[in-house]
Image (cartoon, rainbow over all chains, first blue to last red; front, top):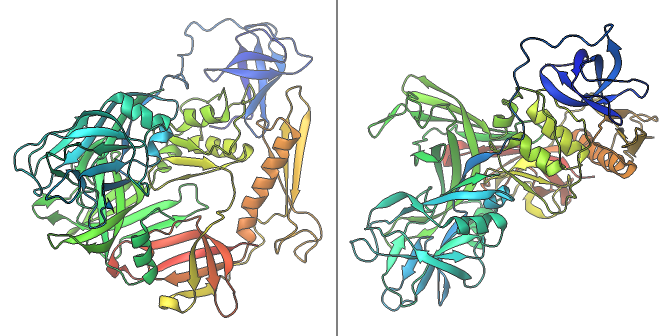
Length: 243
Length: 367
């Protein structure tokens, strides 16, 4: 669809240097030639200029304003209607920290301690992608979590989830914030949609937080959750949003 | 360069490595296939930075694998082209786990949307495009009149298909009244970026990142001819077509006056006064988004820099695949004729499988 010179119907009188006009069914703000007087209902000849992205009315057509059509043009979709969406955010990194530092033998997310080897704080970091929703309101947030057939008791074990400040693995220990109950999984179980507080996802969108952690101060229960190395979708977060 | 651990970086720098590929398929926010059984050695990613949708992915899977039929029948089938998105990850082995399996560090390479899947014989061939395809194909049903600022206008054009991160170094400003874009959604985004001036690309995480239109400053990789089988040779393409050595950007002030910014190429092989042409060879562009002379000048400078990429010397590189190298990365080139010359990766072809052969790059020399 390319316009050069087309007919339009003014929908408002000229005010300042512009008026509104119906161009091919779309009410558009257009420039009006300086010496041209425009009243609502006038038929106009409009030209495109300014890199083909601005309209200008250059003259009025016909001897008088034409009668309004009996069937008005249906209103087009509004370009600025409230936007909503669901953003899939895979974990950027997964890693576990204990007193001796970050584990380098794998990238699973550990909670608790086993055999006096140090209490873990397992983390999933989400990088910068949540920030692409800057200014949006989070309406829901879920994560996908798997527990491999390894580590800890076979039965479902409770976890404690923490909000983490950093959005990627820091050199030292992660900064753990707010706390809530995490998924309780048996070995080999996957939960595809575990709800996390929307305020946590909102904090990631706003840039004041960047990840999720799993930590129990007394080191029990000991649980291993699958990191990115085991599964592509581990800790993938889905954020529902509106703007 | 895709972010990775120091250990993975060191392994990639050595050249000999055990690599892994993982492609998962998503339909909306649902995981519909965790790992597609990509087995062909020809699977590859091709990126041409100058294209409107730069990224393209091709691979084949067996028609049946471990009891799963990969013929794309059904709305939510992992290979159907109903909006299915593919997450491509490439991994490098960094060690051995306690259970004896490889410990692999996966880098998220890119997100794609499936363009088509064609069953032929015992295989299904899949072609996927970069996420900007979602914007390019979504031409506007009715003309779009942006209002507010550059950031709100761009978000209005591409969300919710793609989300955007704006570099804080950019200064947002108001859009003049009366701007109107017909039907080319991606063209409208490019017009806004050119006038801002700014540049955008889809990141490996799958969002649109917009920042100042400048070349990367930090060197990601040093390429030396002969080292690890790397070959570097000058690209012989040469044309006057589409080569300009001046840019004139024109805009309109709020009171109807005309503003103009002009930039001249005085350094490249096509510079004014060089044998290319003693006279300026200008490109003109008009934008009502330019309302002051500094804005017009900034836009002309950026547009000229973009145009100069076309006329710059470039080199073709063949090398052992580097799974973290991306288009737009800064590299250095060393041969018997080049001594650590800086350049920018403009195109790349990356085999996804270990048996897929060498990676190829086109590197634009920085002047």
